[in-house]
Length: 425
Ligand code: UGA
Image (tube, rainbow, N blue to C red; front, top):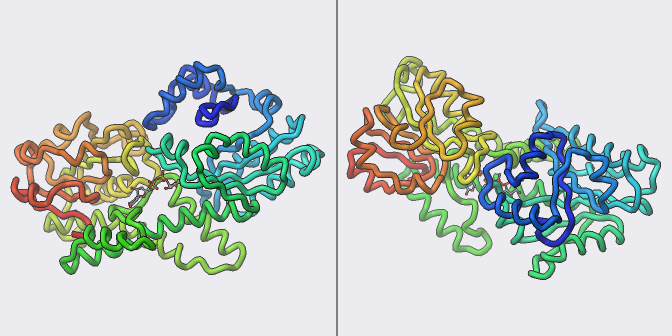
């Protein structure tokens, strides 16, 4: 869709025919702000279409983008089976010189393996007949459109000058707005992606640990993070404390990087600590709730029968994605403790229902909090910032709020009689 908007002719291929049918009608299979507007515009222009016929898509294209999932395997490595399936289909349908671009996040060495695999299966020459390029994606869910059209940088790992020329042409629109291009080898591009995600995950894990210390000693993490960020070397971004990072990227990419370290015998202890401290942070939200409610965290019966409203189920705002969301662990733990859950999220309820069919779901915050013993805010949806606390105070059974994203004003919460706890303040 974005590439088509740049003026390229694009065919999006997926094996799921229902998805293809919906996309051809301009309907996005996920909630992502702004996507459908661009879908409509580009479908109408005639430059964009969707198809379930991979062979035809490959034969009619000069550039193939591999953009399939690389989910976490049971041992923590990235599961590359979808990537290799696509590579095989490409090999079976190569005709003229084709540039095979990997957008999927793949461990170092994968692009070279794709090149060798295609060469072996097709009998074609990886210099003359095709080229492999590593072009990792840095867009964020919920901000994908903005990030695609205004990236901080575009990274292209390549080993063939002809492929470079083709990519310059594909991304000419970004060149025109002076987006920096980083040209490097395949391995460097692959590692840039993992290093970037792991570093951002590290920033979050770091600020969460600092937040835990700040709240214990009476300091304010927001002042600390803001002031740290005034130092240009640190930057204020990705220093918001919370219930731990989730999503389809940081959890899987940090694990995969640890596995890459093991594979090459290189110490990845920093990332290992980030992963374990993030799991701790998610669990800590449950401990904090029990402490806030003055309930023992060792007495297994203490929480039985309590009803909690979970506001926010998605792993972050502006998405319906619940993968590795802190809300999953919190819901599981509270259920294990014998608690009952009311839940509300503006977009993610349908996805959460699949994992937790027995939770009670509500179509707005105010019905979700009626009669509950505590309210937990887990996702930073904007609508939670302006909750009417007076209204909530009049319908809850007990006035406890655990605000895991620091969205509410403490004084306002206290004014309406709530026992309030944020993260790190
Ligand atoms: C992340 C990266 O930010 C993208 O650059 C990358 O392209 C993407 O992974 C990917 O590899 O595909 P995403 O997972 O969509 O993007 O979302 P983020 O905005 O990075 O948030 C990740 C998690 O960190 C969320 O749970 C969010 O709530 C949490 N977070 C983020 C914090 O707890 N504190 C912060 O300061 C920032």
